[in-house]
Image: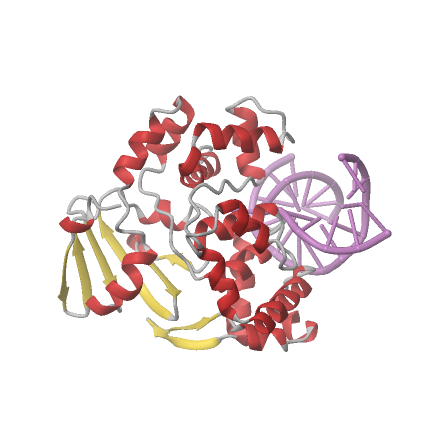
Length: 301
DNA sequence: GCCCAGGAGAAGG
DNA sequence: CCTTCTCATGGG
């Protein structure tokens, strides 16, 4: 957990926050490993997106180990981006531990060496992964953007584009299927409304509380599954991407594919795969899952 | 535990 | 064009 944080040096240059000493970091790996849907790649490899109501453009220079965040100051960095980008975790150590476990994960780590698990907003992640079910990533992104533009809150304009946060539970809870029709969510629309009603009724704090470090990944997932549209896979994603449950191991079609073709499991042996991951990767299962996901989804390109 | 509908569009042939 | 697949879940 410590490791690199003491070596990070931050300063402003114009209106761009600079952070030196950021290693084990690659924007394409981070934003294209299936964990988030609200960032888009610019020319020259920077990414623009929105998180916690803030619009930012993020760039990284690997040679200088230099992270640059446009639209952020040092205070924003401390209250949002430092944790969001998981900069205080020592991925160098994590990778060396995982790489020794077996040759497949070692190759996957080499391939996606700059992956970091973002610490995303719980409500946004809950909505996003309900939308993600039985869906493809380009369309998931469109659905989420459309939901934000239709019912969300204006968050600012950046380089000629307007950005919106996702609707708060209260707004989505009172929305009708007709209100959501423009978002083209398909049968997931009613899941979102049901889930929003539950979060609004119980209070957003009840959702926030599921991220407590007192709860095991299993307990967190069990609680998440009480929301409509949340099954085992989606629950594991939320636990991993918004609640720091790093031993969660979401099994989607791509992970099934890796487990089938590279580890020799039967296509539908979910239990075997989960048990294998728990045994092989343990408390780092979720991070291993991200390397494997990035590996299998990019290998053929 | 098994099976299948439900919505829409991206990807591939 | 037409078919298949898509970061699964709920309900019968």
